[in-house]
Structures are given as structure tokens and as C-alpha cells.
Length: 325
Image (cartoon, rainbow, N blue to C red; front, side):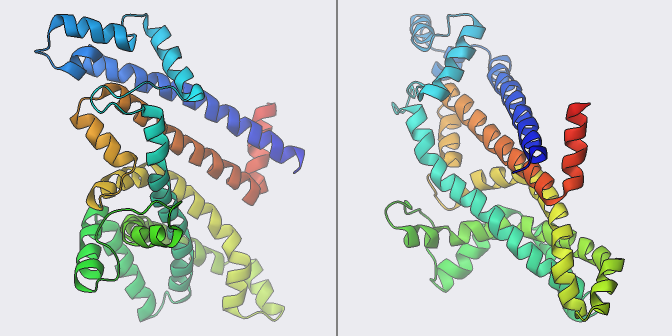
């Protein structure tokens, strides 16, 4: 790895660190500004004042806000976020356990949507002037318009209820049975990646159409390559940039969709834990979950930004030049 790439990674890592600190402060502050007294939020407005005082002392809410914040942040590094007041479970351990199915669902759908979008978008661009390209374009429009939870219900009805190919819900831990786990996630991943695949397909199609008119495509054809081969060999690298761009922009909505679909398919991930915590007024659990989801988005943005620089050296040059300046 050359020095240019190392400078780019270092700069993006610093951006990640600063964003994480600012994000944690926002999450910590908003829950208190919007909800007021955390102890009252947990126990309810009609709670016994003595019980409220005791809970404040138990959770350390009687300390200055900056000590509460530092204690909370230290818990992420030491694995000690305390226990759920209503559920009684260890918050850190529960988040770690629930993160596995959520990660499989979110990142699995991201990976599948990128592969499908490149393949379908390229095929659509190569057939832009015939009926096959038009059909793909219409299907992409329908995919963009369809909400993920509605797509999930349709997939369950067709492939689980009518055909019986996949389970209608539930989750098998991947460490117990990897194949059964992936089988249980096929419908949720399909439902989640439907809309994102449709959006990326439009971007790939547009980028490929631009690539087809470039001089280097005609040069490759002059050297003996077919038109399709020239586009695939020389165009995919350029197409990967807009695909990464739109994938980065979709990360937030992808995780939001994963949270919704976990409740549709009864998957015990972060989304179901968040829903239970909100319904049970578990403020400390909601606070930690919000920060974990934020960190997932920030880390994925970091990886995407690094990938930009590795795929397109011009981006790395601009960013490292800005860092030196």
C-alpha cells in the first residue's frame, strides 16, 4: 500500500472519529432535551418521587452530564453499559447478540443489491433501444415505488404461504446452522434490497450509457473487441463509482428498512430490540442502540470513502492534496 493510500485512510479515519464523537454527543443530548428527566421517562410521570430519586442514583443520573456521558462512552470500550431496568438483561451483551442478524440482513442486502444492479443495469444499457431494456426500466420504476415492508408481505405470501419454499418468519442463528440461517434470511434480504437495487440499476444504466460513447470504447473495438466485451472490460470500473456513491447514500434508509423488516419477519435483531425498548421506555437501551446504528452508518461511509480513493486515484489525489493544504 503506497503512501497516498495511507494518507487517505488516515484522513478518513480521523473524519470517522470526529463524526463519532459529535454523533454520540447529539444522541446523548437529544434524548435528554426531548424527554426531560430520564428517570421519569422510565418510571412514568405518576411514579413515586422516592422511586425516581432511587433510580437516578442507581443509573448515575444525579451526576453532572459530562460524567454521565464519559461513563456511557467508557461502557462501549469496556463492555459495560449496565442492565435493562425493565428486562433485566445486560445491555451490551444483548446488543452484540442482536447485531449479528441485523448485520447479515443489512450488509447481505447491500452486497446482493450491488451485484444485481451492476448486472441488470449493464444489461439494460446494452439493450436500451429494444423491448428488454424498456421492461427493465419499468420494473426498476416499480421497485423504487414499492416500500420494503410491502414487498416483504408480498414475498411471504408468494414464496412462504403459496409455494412453501421459505419460512414466513423467524431466524436460525448462523453459528448453529449456517445454511438454515441463510435460508431464513432469503426473503428479508430480497425484500430489503428490492428498492435499493432498483435505484442503483438506474444509476448503472445511466453511467453505462455514458461510457458507451467514450473514445476508449471505440479504440477497444478497433483492436478487435466486440462492443459488449469493450463495455464490460472498460466500463465496469467507471460504473463502480456511481454505484458506491448511491450505496453510501442508501445506508441510512437500508438500516431503517432492516429495522422495519425485522418486525415483519420476526427476526431478533437490533430493530426488534429497539421497538421493545421504545415501548418499554428503556431510555438507556434506546440511547445505546441509536449510537450503535449511527456507528454502523459511519463505519460503512468510511469504507466507501476509502474504496472511492482506491478505485479512482483522482479522488485520492484531491483528498490528500486537501489534507496537505
